Length: 484
Ligand code: NAD
Image (cartoon, rainbow, N blue to C red; front, side):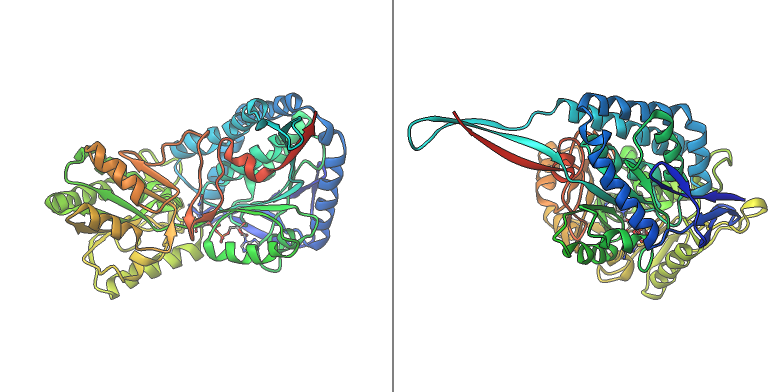
């Protein structure tokens, strides 16, 4: 059986404690994951610290950037291996993983290598109180050993989104992939060795959160900062751990994002956009829209059209022809989503479509599939409108005015993303300024330029990553003042 080992100081390391990794489309055991304990975390931190003092610590930015380009090229050369690993871990449609997860996973190394190579720091010339001159300039130095704690929904993409800039800035990283998706992070260890990234620069420790590798990494005093993507509740626990030693955190957390469709929107494009934002990756996208607000004149037509789209999505495993929607990540997550499906009914929702489990046969009979689901008719206080579900579902409610749409969008503790559909340019910009989010898409969704800031406001995150913004977290900016 396949073994997912830890990757410490350039070596693959087994441990005595293992847990099963299952394919969510089939529920079959894919392999055994070797859980890291305190001893492995201590060893990885020591190796990470040693690497900062070794060849990696003195390597020129140009050479570091070359190495990261080589990492990206090697991921692309082993594209099929990465794709197979991601599909076995997540069960998502092959077309999705091959167009987004793996290529973006590789691209994350190139983009940040190029940014770090080219971005200047600030510099000022000033007159001193004694009438002389001084120049001051910024010098960026690495943060040190960075803990990278990852979720399962876009495993390679979200992990490299952090590892790419961290390494480009000269840090070393200790990655803790989600216990649900250990494969691509492990495979990346092979890539690091193949292209000659020094030992201890990229390391992987497997396990869970509390009482396991996640907690041990985030509490370790030798870890200089923690970058985390996952649930807001987990972020609170990690922030408490980071308080000891006053270590910085960068958080990309949960959301309960609103999609807003005005009556003047290009109807077909809006329907296509909301179909993606509600159902892509089986709704397991932090940026997804579980709350949709549609202006009253087109409400009924919109609900009918989205219903048709949802019912047209073919449910199945990665290689089913024409598949549009895969499984949820685990039996536990399916139970959570089905719990919300039941709650919506109990709270009085009109179930427009879905609300249950599809009848699956053959190899997918035991996969964690649920039906894409649309509700209407609930008050704003309903659980499925307030809480992040992370499943292929949305509630659609009508609104009348721009002000009402803004108030509805903002009536949440979260503040990650929104998608607004209108052909009125002025209205689009007013909405972008008024909705309290880190990311606002107009007539689009999940359209990204990796040079731009990414992150959430309110309970959806702390800090921004992307482009030069990643440098704010992954480096210390030192000011040097020189009196001439
Ligand atoms: P999660 O918080 O359950 O787990 C994320 C990671 O944290 C896992 O590796 C887990 O083992 C680890 N962990 C759990 N408890 C920990 C602890 N106490 N200390 C240290 N590590 C701990 O999240 P998930 O279920 O894997 O992912 C789904 C969530 O992630 C959703 O809320 C989603 O919105 C969010 N998300 C946010 C973004 C974003 O960019 N804002 C992107 C993707 C996912």
